[in-house]
Structures are given as C-alpha cells and as structure tokens.
Length: 299
Image (cartoon, rainbow, N blue to C red; front, side, top):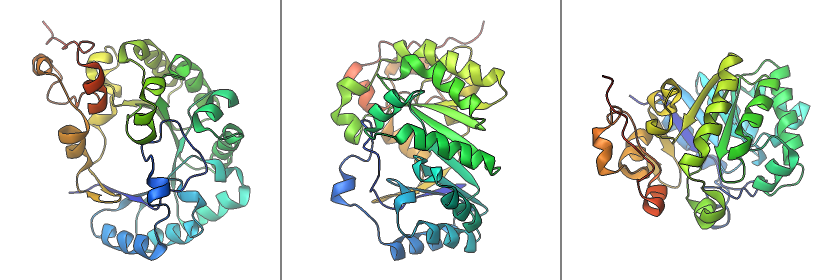
C-alpha cells in the first residue's frame, strides 16, 4: 500500500544550488506541461491520500496554484509543498496557497547566515526570502518542516542552523546527507564531507531541537554514525512513497535499498543491519567502507 506520492512538476528553479541532485534536468527537461501533471495527480489519487508537489522549484510554475487546487479537489487529505520557500516571502502568495488547499510545507534552509545559505544556493537574497517565508507560514498557523542538506561547507554550522530553526518556531527539521548526483556529483570534492567529520555536529544539532521539543531526524546517515541518537534515523519512519519523476519509482524505499545506497560486507554483523540502509552508493564507491564500524549487539 502506497502511503504518499511525490510529483515532480518541472525542473526550473530560482536557486542554483551547488548540491542539486536534479543537475541538468533544468535545461534538458525544464518545465512539465500542466495537463500532464494533472493527469499524474488524477492517477496518483487512486493510489494514496497524501501528495508532495515538488520540482525543481514548484512555486515558480505559473500554474502552481491551479495544481494545488486540483490536488485538493481530487481529495488529497495531505498536500505538502516541497520548496526553497522564497515565494512565500510574499504575503498574498502565502494566503492564496493556503486557500488553494496546501496544508504542509517543507522548506530548504542550508545556512544560518546569508553568506552561507546564499553561497550554497548561488542566489543573492535567498536567505532573507526563505526566512521570511518561514515566518509568514508560521504566522498563518501552518506546519513547517526544514530540510537541511549536510555538506562540506555547512556541517560545522549545523548547531547554529538548528538554533535558528528553533527560533523560527518550525515544527520539524532534518539533516539530510548530500546525495552526490547531478550538480552535487559534479562538485563532489567541494561538496561531500566525510561522515566521521560531520557526526559530532549532527548530534549537537539534533540535541538543540530535542531539548526544544521539536521533531528532529537525519536522512542518509547510517546507524553506526548515530550512537546515542538511534531513534532519530528517518529511514525507519519514511512512508512508502511512489515518485513520479522523468520515470516512475514505484517504491522509493526499495529504490534506496537496492539501487541508491550501498553497504559493505562487514555491515552484516551490525545489530542494525536489517533496518540500516547504509550510505549513498556514490559515497561508498568513492571512499569505501572503513569509516563504518558495525554496532555490536548489546551484551
């Protein structure tokens, strides 16, 4: 049973993130015609009650509000917008999106300062717009989660980013280890950090949210790097999701386990082998497995 459908609505974007997994889809594919997306939504509604509208940057699509309205008319109970949040700096845009039926917002914030966030997104002013977008949505009583992509430039600042998230009163945030596909793959050396380097900063960042009563989690960080924080590994709770991209991924969990990630032979001796997905395949192929030490069963 599918719990959620993820619908890519095109690949144009007003950011140029150094770690974008979509890479050249922006130029090779660009936008996706609205009738095609509506057809996908109609099919998806027979499969799940929860939908994520994403891209690229879905909010810059001229027919964005029409798509949100269509999802609501089709009876989706949970309509999440996955976005860089910049358009939500506009009050009227917030109001129209909420009235159209959106009821959950996942925003991307990758730095605690304009200098860091705007460098990573390669877009001047992006930080201020995203932060204002978060404030506008929270002021309107919306549920807001943050996706923070962990990379070589920001991992030392994860506690500061977490502190900012708490000040902004977001409901949830996650640290997602960068996936070296697309632009991130092209920029591997300057973008992808070692897991052993990020571990203490990830844990400090999680603790800030835990103490503040926030929902916090990690994505694509193996259990052996999460000692003391095992309950915060997101893979154990990610719903079964179908993704409508250029092609269709029927089961994103199966894709991650069988294609997206790669574990070493010694992982079979770890107490979490049955539930841990391991690191992204591109990371394992570049750096190997020596960092990952099996967690022994309790005595």
